Length: 527
Ligand SMILES: Cc1cc2nc3c(=O)[nH]c(=O)nc-3n(C[C@H](O)[C@H](O)[C@H](O)COP(=O)(O)O)c2cc1C
Ligand code: SF4
Ligand code: FES
Image (cartoon, rainbow, N blue to C red; front, side, top):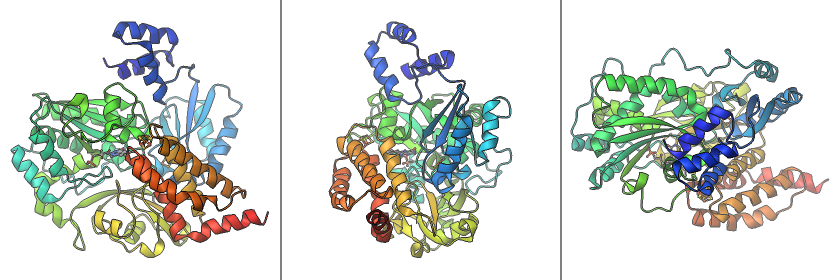
């Protein structure tokens, strides 16, 4: 059993990691104690102090902020303050942005409801408290019924079809899926591995959660097809621990795949529950975690396609990317391309959150306008007017309402000054303070920085500090003086995408809504 799996088991057994257990583990695994301690101290999942009776995690990130999460969380914390067995802690996005303000009680998602109802659940945790997986499956175009025969295609044919479809990675970077599979296929070294990145943790993103709940069979089938195409013999689903409720559906899909002969003969898949946070979604940090080390990103190149897990060729794709594969191979690249509209090609699963009436996950043709998607999600909440939107989650630039006619697609959103990212539309209504929103987003990246690069670790903290001064009426123009140099440094010197994009949302707000900053500065000056 691996070190992280052993630590998880020990913690489940005793509630925390006790010094004597760590010493015993070091002897048994024949690893130095400091190696174990450096792993324990990196991952938020592990604790060395006794666990409370009930642990309540309150999301502090942008979609929950937009749903009044600050006051909601403060009220809940006040209601629970007298119960000594309850630990309340603010945490980053829980992947329940559609149920904002979101919280978890002993690892089970609650939220959206009144704080009093949640406080009652906390005082009597037990049966009533379980993460529901939707019983009825909505209809998805990527899951046409009656087409369940196993896909039998040669590797060259499979990769050719993916390339012809133009499918791009849905985890954020948008790299060509067919090309990535081909690169792994061409590597001579064996064994090879396939990993599904299900660590989804960026504020505004929760589409992978819904896919895992509703369409786990497509994810598993996509991985099986990938293994055959690239020649892999082992696979992992790297699942964020806040999605542990998806283990059941995934195990069901794995058993079904075994029954159909897709798994078991030369390729098998394990589920790995992530002990960490957002940074583990970065593909090389994910590999470090699977290799039982601190989840800090690696220098690239070499890329995982040639030297990934344990130095072997490794294919890493997002949940949605794998889920798209079966329908493309069954119905063909031309069918897939024809699903897009207005000259765009293919389908996309979008998470919609923030100030809309019906936050949720929507499968849309690429080419759908942002304004249309907002309407599909019930329109801006409370019949307010649209002020701004971020089309690709917390790491994407905010665009003003007059750009809402932009067609959702990688290239058009980039031309409009933002990005599709992993597909997470965050809607902000007229009347909302965008500088507070931007501060919240920068603080997410500050909180989630792994700390390996000084500019990312110190730069994000500096910007949060300057924004806090401004928002509390004590600021001056220093932010505008230091921001250009800080942004350039972070973009150019950060090892991974987190630091490279951390200031994007803020600079987009300051660029398109300069009055937001001047208003706060003027308020401070008038004090
Ligand atoms: C900080 C950070 C977090 C990331 N989180 C995720 C994630 O949760 N899920 C994901 O699929 N990709 C995530 N990515 C992108 C992955 O590194 C990688 O590009 C992706 O998993 C490749 O799959 P795709 O080609 O199917 O998109 C993240 C990247 C960065 C820089
Ligand atoms: S950019 Fe930030 S998150 Fe990425 S490796 Fe550097 S310190 Fe860590
Ligand atoms: S659950 Fe709060 S921002 Fe996602």
